[in-house]
Amino acid sequence: DVLCTVPEQEQALTEFYRVIKPDGILLMNLPALDWLKGQHDSAVNILRRYTPTGLKSLLTQHGFGIEKMTFANSFLLPFTASYRIISGLLPAGRNGPRSDVFLPPRPVNSVLRRVMGLESHVIRRTNLPIGMSLLAVARKPMGVGNRSHL
Image 1 (cartoon, rainbow, N blue to C red):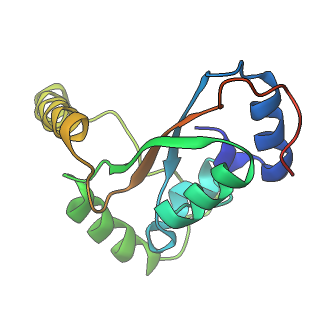
Image 2 (image 1 turned 180 degrees about the vertical axis):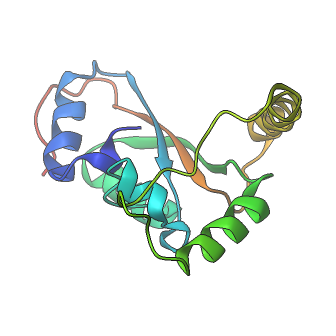
């Protein structure tokens, strides 16, 4: 969840590779798709969003093998995308950009948790074709020391 907020992305990936043991795993949950960029991104300092092709290239350039990559937060994408598009047409408030993420009322949150639980079961069996987030499981190969791959 941090790579998207780090200006020195290449340096961060080099350091991830250095500190992960051989055969160790790097688990990433990153914002996806530039067209979903909104006030939330500015409010929480998200510098970039990712695509599967771009993230795969970035990880393999740094020596990682990809074990799984899939979109996530897919089932709620139509609602969030609609909101982000509409809110993108409106000016930011007096206090600057604001996050659109909030804890909904308990009954709504219960439904959302079930939707996300269903999605997590689907992701275990297949990759989702689109979503608000991109999940990646990358592995540092066995028998590789802590040298940089840049």
